[in-house]
Image (tube, rainbow, N blue to C red; front, side, top):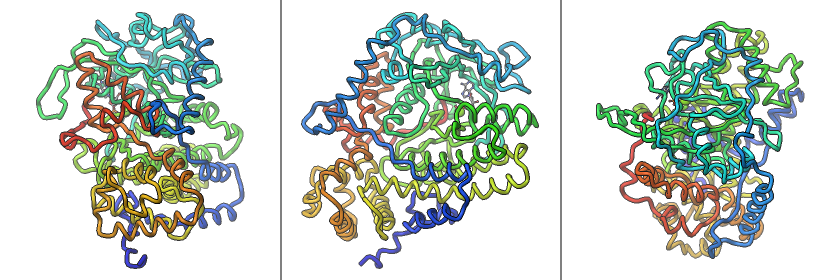
Length: 613
Ligand code: AMP
Ligand code: MG
């Protein structure tokens, strides 16, 4: 029976681009990679590779609802989250004037642009330009705040965010102690072509904060006014894109995907003109500012611009800085340090994109200026979580050719890493250049391997069996044929018992019902049941699967409803979504009442998101 369906083991259905460069994943890959590691001497480079390949799948699981579906495991996990916060409450900072940032390290390492003044220009020989934020015109309102970031990262008492002071600090009206606002100079390849100087055209880095855990985070305002890099832009961001960035970066964190974080969202009455769909229909919207955080905001484009303008000394300085600060396993005196650095980024970017795929996330604008050197998700714009499974899903209506369709993200990752390799050429010897090319070739296998691991976990498969890859590919093909919902198909497979599956008792499970309309569903199900029968108890399977298959993701229609309300100063739905998406793996009463795990409303299909923000 299996052989009859071999046609489903087809590269098209590995969520990859329809190009032969990404052939189907199979378990033999693991063997190949193991062999690879045995034959290569364990230099630092390959240790990094080996470590990255076998790091565990990260999943979060805790419960907020207290509803009947919340089992003991979920409750226990919630208690620990709450008690973690309670313990911290006593030690949190109440007075914001005591919250001190430091810009010393950045400014000492990278002396800022010698040209002073906030006017648009081509900038040379520096990494940063000093630039003061332009405060948003009031009245200002605090639309959302992330408790997890405020308390867990910034050590600030949530009560302090309700003050007038917080509004002023988080909107660029007042500078935090120690802050020297900077705009970063970077370039990038946009939609395949070198776009020259881009830079922070509407973002200001405020400085670094070292928290109680010793972590250093760089705080940034987005939407805070013009900088030398604003080109023809107004330096502003509107409410709709800011709500989306705030919610999605936090949601991605709770899904376990590496990402920048968002601390707060402030909205104003300042008019901002936008042609939302680039059809000549310019409308007045309102300005907003997100206070966001990352351990570093450097991108592939940060190195590209230095290579393009021949600033090799500065490029070395940046590389040494990034390696010292963020790649602790790389020794500063290692003659291959830039190569190890490159290899790490190749690995981690492959992992990141595989993680995007495992939650059905399409970034939307995978330009090199939006790809982080720390391989975290940054610069949320016209992203989308895929609803019906479709490898050709394009979230950005401005992306006519579908260059950044979900199924092409791995290939685009490869393209971007090739651009990074080119940017690093000035610091590589000829031999290192050749080795870097070999490392880049390994990207496809690393990506496929990670994809395969993540999807195996999504199906609850333990151990290794020959047909595991086939089982996954077969399911994805059926999902594509039946347009089954990506998130809920996997979630409902996690919730349904083996006994129910055996009896095909899946009424009430709308995504599985859609899937079961496929002619070959019974064949796939038999294979799956047989596979599961060879591993341990079903409760454990469901627990594991529920911890990696979210019940709630930020679907466009959910964000759209919250944005509609936020635009009339009702932030209740943004708050509701933040709460729900901070426990995406746990069934919650409020989310169920809101229909967030139900079949999307018919109007959801008509929604469009463009680059305009
Ligand atoms: P993004 O598409 O948000 O990644 O932005 C690409 C480039 O355009 C970056 O250099 C941004 O800083 C810049 N940019 C986008 N929107 C604006 C704006 N409204 N004002 C100034 N610069 C902007
Ligand atoms: Mg960007």
